[in-house]
Structure formats: structure tokens, C-alpha cells
Amino acid sequence: MLVSLVVSLVLLGALYGVTLAAASTGRVARATMQMTEDASVAFGILRAQLAPAGYSVPWSVGPDGRLARRRTGLAIKGCDNLFVRPADSIDQLSCRGGNGPDALAIVFQADLRNSLASDGRPLDCLGNRLPDSDGSGNPLYLSYSRLYVEDGGLKCLGPGNTGAQMLVEHVSDLRLLYGVGPDVDAAPSPGDGSSSGSGELTLGRVLYYASAAQVNADGAWGKVLAVRACLVIRSEDDLLAGVPQSYSGCDPFGAAVQPTDRRLYRAFTTTVLLHNRVGSSL
Image (cartoon, rainbow, N blue to C red):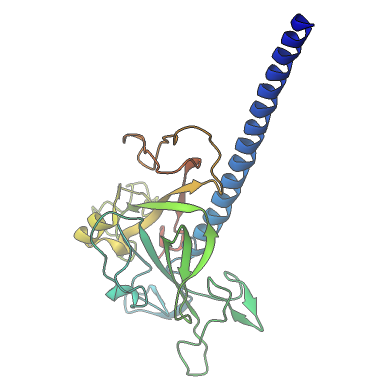
């Protein structure tokens, strides 16, 4: 009987261990799926805002014979931390000091082709109808989105809102690099590097990627052609019974990041081309 009891206890212990391992594997699999879905939604929002950055319909023909946009000015601006006053106009935005998640501001002329709409009016990043920025009878709807990570999620502030609202939860960090190229608003001229010499325009060529601080120092916000975004997503619940697990952050050459909790963390990266800033004067 003693031998049978010992064998039974051993078998029960082994079965219990297998059950715990299977449950842990299931939790990790569900958490990985949740993080992937959150990253997909967050990148979808970023792409939807970034892709039309700087878009504006042709308004007139300038003295140089080139089509002029109805709206001119900055299409994009960022900070290597949060904005001091996110409600400021894009050309007046200033950055907080320190090292925190990056922030991004994007402006484009919204219409029924590049934005969701309600009652014939385009919607902002929070689903509110955009106000007419012209008022002259020829409506001008400007989508002005400020995106940043705060309170554990990705937030957006639209032009008609008094405060930002959470769009995606479980976002721990946002890091941005900006692809800078030639001046897309300058007319190509021989020897200025904007033509390959064979008649093929190369205005869309990214010359270098830099942080917001470097782009600002270079005065190159008007030359940004692409944005490389990295998001760090965390699991909703603590999953691990042991110590916190380190992970690779947005810097592939940096040291592993050690969290203060036992959640899972994963960095996701994508690059978005600013279609209206590449090889076009519109």
C-alpha cells in the first residue's frame, strides 16, 4: 500500500506540474495575441493619420507655374517627450524636457476620401466632426491630431476637443525617428541632388533618420518623408509567477529593459511613408 501511495503521489505531482505548465503556456499565448492585436490597432491609427500628412487640394497656380496647395505650413512635428501644451498650433508646439515617450502632431486637409465622415463632414481622430476652418462658403476641414502615450495608453487630441482621449490601452512607450530627404517644396534644378541625371526624380529618397530634437535643430520638418515608429506593448495582466522578465526595447542595440512588474512586454516597429511629401509639390 505504501508503494502504491507513493507512486500515486508522484503521478499526481507530475500531472499537477503538467497542468500548471499548460495553463501558463495558455496565458502567455493569450497575452501574446492581445499584445499583437493592440499593436495592430495602434499602428493602424498611426498609419491612418501619417499617410495623408501634408495633403491639401490644388488651389491655384503659382508664378513659377507649379500648383499651390490650399493649405501651406508644417505637415508634421514631433517631440522626444510630451508636448508642453498639446492644444497649441503645430508651429507653436514646444517639448518637455527629460526622457519620456515621444509625441507627434500631424496636419492634413481632410475630405470624404481620406477620412471617415458623418453627415458629409470628415471626422477627427476621436470621431468628432471637423469644424470648417475657412468659413467663406468653400469648406476647409483640417485634421490636426496630436498623438502621444500617457496613462498607459495611446491618446489623441483632435482639433475640436478640450482634452485627449485614450485610443489604445496597454501601450507603454512610443519612439519615433523621422526620415529626412531633400526639400520637396523646392523646384528641382540641375545639380541640386533632386534628380538622378537621367530624368528620374529622386525627391522621395530618405537621406537620414533622426530624432525629433535633431530634425528640429536641422530645421528639417518640411523635409520629413517617412516616420519610423516603435511601440512597446504590455500584457493586460501579470502572468509570471517568478521575477519580472527583461525585454528588448525600441533600441535594438540598447541594453535589455527591466520592468518593475511581471507583465510581458514586446516592442513592435513599422515605417510609414508620407505619400504627399514624396516627389510631389501638393
